[in-house]
Length: 317
Image (cartoon, rainbow, N blue to C red; front, side, top):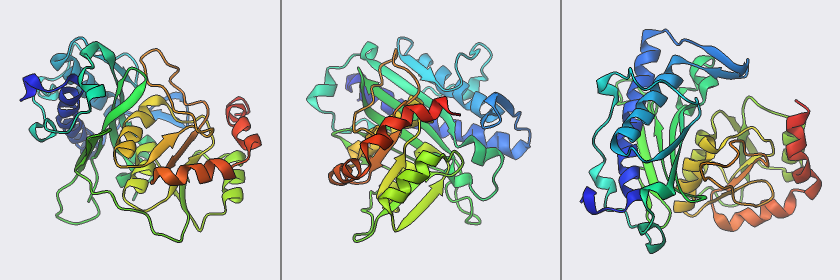
């Protein structure tokens, strides 16, 4: 079946198994207690041995299976020549191969794809904050041309607070083909629950929250985790009027959210582009809703002057 599946489905099926292995590596490094923390651009931009190793696993595995694939990883260029052999995943998730693939995606060739990889989203929670390991995710997003169309989210520490429980879960989706591994839940009616950043707050973020007047605000780490709250019915919207996210943060969550009927755009309602040459930073912030029909309400109620200030907030840091 793998040989006859469309290119995007094959890469997605491989990415499911690869994300699982990356999660194993992340847990192994944490268990050894040698995180190897370095600052990339400052104290709020950390990288660990787990970030580097998980990315090496993901990139080496994808390029082993699909040498012609374009892959963009958060941790930049890495030396893949000395990867342990057991880090290179050579199989794929058979259950993913029968996902419905729309005619628009079936014809996409391998050279039309770009894969965006965040090997460890939520590094601050992984390294600094006890009790928030469930915020950590592995994100592998697939784009055809400029459009985010498929994604994998792996939570290496899902269930970690339940004694004796099996750690970790993986779910994935394809636009037009649905989602596997997670049952979408609609958020509670009659309320307005908003999730936003836990650790990168700005005055503009608080100003936006004051305007929206949500019934509840969930401040959590990791872009992947925030979008997951929408998928799990715990929040109605993810509001982040700041240029803090990158394409590898949003490609996989956007694709899976769209596959289950939600919507993710920038703060002005424009769809982000995910071709390999695009700017990595999401300059106009992120606005996502659990249900696509709710998206317009947030766009209408956030003033244009706020939307126009999002890019400027980067220059003021």
